[in-house]
Length: 217
Ligand code: SF4
Ligand code: SF4
Image (cartoon, rainbow, N blue to C red; front, side):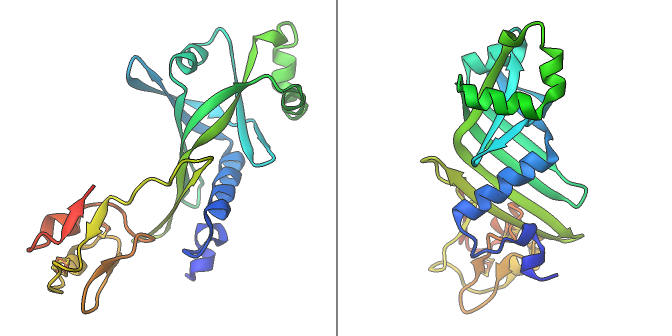
């Protein structure tokens, strides 16, 4: 399978903005997605409806009486995750902010007639949130043994750092990491390297390198 056929047309040359856009589009298309908030320091997850993608921003709603709302008031960090039947997955770690923008509210209700009807007696219970900043990644298990990943950050936040690092000064080119790599992500040569596009972050290379040339963040 060519690189262009995986990760929804993205390649390792894709820009941060292109990856973010694809990740947000994917989230919107999956729509019913797992969302975790923080409750007393512990994660609490539920299936959530990502209900509006507008001008490059994702929005969702909750009601002011719901535990989700209380949790967001105490800690506005969320993680959303979803996967398609073709094994394209998205994960976004975001800091969310509440919005009172009447245009967004109107657009939201226009596109979500069921919610509008459900809350017709009590529309002021609805509270609107935007994913304001954060980082994320999209991954694609595109064959039984091949996996690709691209990361992004937005609104001042960097992509999540890579987990494993190969120090080419220490590498003796013994080939052990190549043999044990489950993601086919080790690139051989005079000095070996990790191709993060295919790295599963399994840590096998780190555990087996005989000279400690691979470190973990
Ligand atoms: S196992 Fe370590 S020394 Fe051997 S090729 Fe990989 S990084 Fe280099
Ligand atoms: S962490 Fe796993 S997938 Fe990534 S390079 Fe090392 S062995 Fe390969």
